[in-house]
Image (cartoon, rainbow, N blue to C red; front, side, top):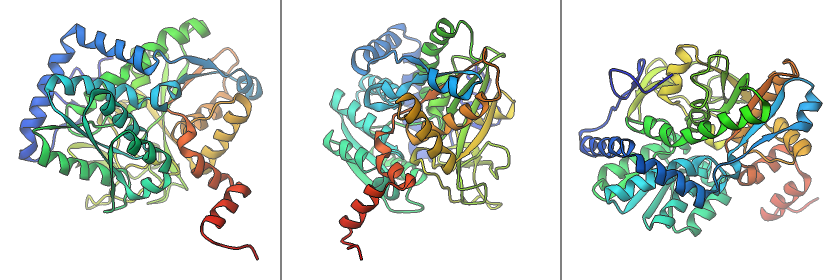
Length: 415
């Protein structure tokens, strides 16, 4: 199933496009031309795969979760380990590919947006590797809840700009990055972190992330002796989901499930689910593209909420919106409480620490595996590792030592 083969380039059903100010049109057209030229050059993909092999540690393995499979007593559970990729998440796949493209274009500066910080760390790492100047835009709320990643971005030489407008999360960081790009496009490339934004970004990021699915397909067939019955991935913008789903889109027997942020419930402003049943998302245009956004009747964007900074976004990939509309991908939502419990279970039974974003996929995968047969197989894409979430998880779990640390730091004395 070729989701990119449409008559109107850059559209996926009714979604996609490039709704951009005139000042950016020449730059977007230039980027599109360079990307098309790179795709047509077999040596570009070879150089990309070689770079990921010798610098990022690919291919990443698939792990059979034998303990959890036995405990749950249903389907056999396998995990694609993007947490073992360099910088701890799938984000490096995309930024290294865009870095090679930037070298071809002859630009010297990169900018990026980030929510959970993994894309920011990956972009700063790529910039250090290639010798680019680097600026990262990050919502001020996320700067505080993802301080470990901010620290590493700064140590890698990037300038981190806290965005203090709007809700001070991912959508606001994207807006500020686009404003920067409009004033610096001669020397600057915007390293979009997910499969959103104006064309060609959804297609380009999907192209680089497809390596996840290309690796996962033969590996799971060899390990499990069959195709998986279901594949799960968390969905914020949707880059890790598009990455793993592309390996299985052509196999109708494989059900694809995207898991969004259910936050504290499905009330308005309490979640960040756009495509799951019961959501209030509707088609709209913002930040350069058309997709399903959480917005009111007048097109004003609603507030979102999630324990996972990387899923705390109003929109979703236009490709995934189309795949949901035609019924190829099913969407569910996992609440913050469910996410923390799933994270604890995976840690305690398997010694693996998923990122809070990835834990959303585990929630739905573990829940559904229990009702499946023992000879059935599911594959969960673990998009990243949970090191960055240590403070958020400790607070959510209610760790007494962490509470005491916070009290001492704030100068609060025990009675």
